[in-house]
Image 1: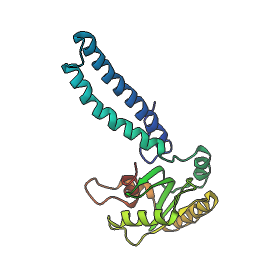
Image 2 (image 1 turned 180 degrees about the vertical axis):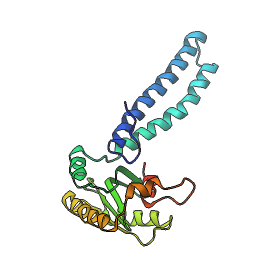
Image 3 (image 1 turned 30 degrees about the horizontal axis):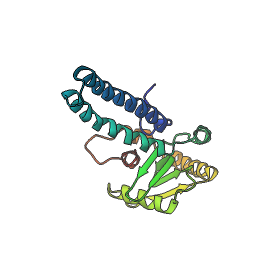
Image 4 (image 1 turned 120 degrees about the vertical axis):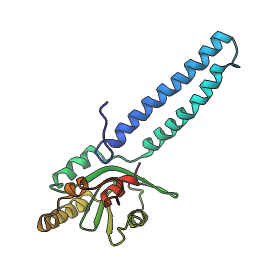
Amino acid sequence: MRRVAKGNFGYIEYNRKFAAVRTVIALAICLIIFFTGLIIYKSNKSAFSIIAAIGCLPTGLSAVNLVMYLRAHPCSKKAYDIIEAHRNGLLIRYDLEMTSYDENYGIAAATVLDKNVVCYTEDNTLDTVNCEKHIKNQISQSGYSNYTVKVFKDINAFCSRLDQLEQIRVTKKIDPQAIEDAWVPGTVETCALVLLSISL
C-alpha cells in the first residue's frame, strides 16, 4: 500500500485502508496479550490484563480516526479525470475534508490563485454558503482576509472557473508550485497550505 501525501488524489482512500489495518492490528495485539495472561495465570487479574487495557487507548484512537475517514468525502476518479483535463499550470489539492464544531465540509478539489480560492464538492448535502464562510474565516486567521472563496457543486462550472484562472495565471506569469516550494517552515503558511492544515 503506497503512501499518498495529503492534498493528493486518493489521500482519503489510502488513510481509510491504513487506519483499518492499523486498528485491526492494534486490536489483535491487545487480545493476544489479554488471552496470553488468561492462559498463563488462569485469571484476568494479571499484568497482562493491565497492559492489554492500556493498549486499548491507542486502539480506540485509531478506530475513531478510521470512522472519521470513512465519513469523509473523497474525490471520485471520474471527477478527478475531468478536473485534471482543465488543470494546466494550476495547483490542485484533492480530498480535503474540513472539520468545524458544527459540521464537516467535504471538498473534492480546491485551488488557490491570485486571491481566489475555488473549490469543488461532490457532497450534495454540503451547505456551500457555510463552507465558504468557514474557509474565509480560517484563511483570514493567517492574514488572507481579502480573498474571494467560491465552492461549486457543478463540475462544469468549476472547470470553467479553472480555465479562467489559468488565463490569469498565464497573463500574470504566476507559478503556484514555485510559490509553495518557496515557503519556509516557521513562516506564515501559504493560502494553499492553510487549506491543507484545516483538513483531515
